[in-house]
Image (cartoon, one colour):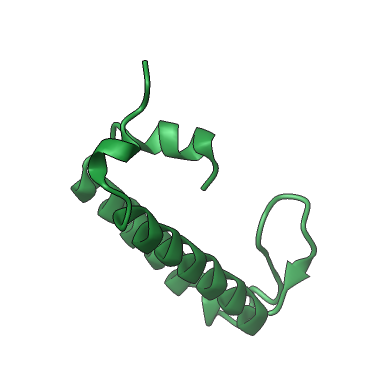
Length: 84
């Protein structure tokens, strides 16, 4: 996530964020094994990927965000507050 993404997601509760993750997971599950799908774009304008490639990209993306969250959680909460 970039700062804009963080700012947009900040008002969401943990339950809302989990719901978004579950919806994304369900969307991937619904199509990833469908042989009629073929190649899958990861983002608008990117080249299409095979299902295995797509899953690897998603896995790496999630791992990066997990590492970011772990690193941020090591920062004292008062250091994360925005300066007005």
